[in-house]
Amino acid sequence: MRENSTAWGELRAHSVFDPELREELAAAGTAWAAEVAGRLAELCPAAPPGAVTAAAERLTALLEGLSVRWLSGLLPLTHARNLVREAIGVEASRLGSPLDVN
Image 1 (tube, rainbow, N blue to C red):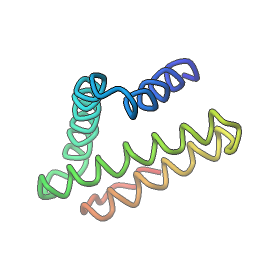
Image 2: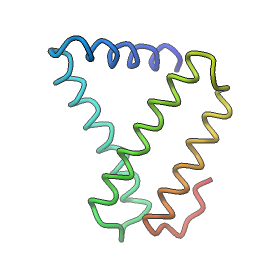
Image 3: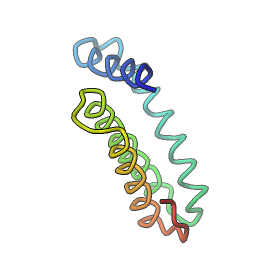
Image 4: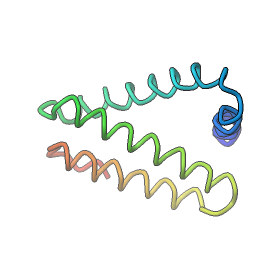
């Protein structure tokens, strides 16, 4: 997990200075957000597609930020996981999920 997270973080950091990386990184990010949106849509089938997409974008951005903090030693992994679980619960609740995802 650490190796994968580190590689993605380095790729994102390099894309700031290398425009050629941005297109592929954007495509990968879009695919990841779409996958998360698909899971959220399954959990909250009555939610509007735009709301599901926005929730997925918030969750993936949060995870990227938490990953950087975890990798740099600023945040324990267990705390990062708890924050992600709580964020999923908040987003699912906002989308109208009757399920407890925590």
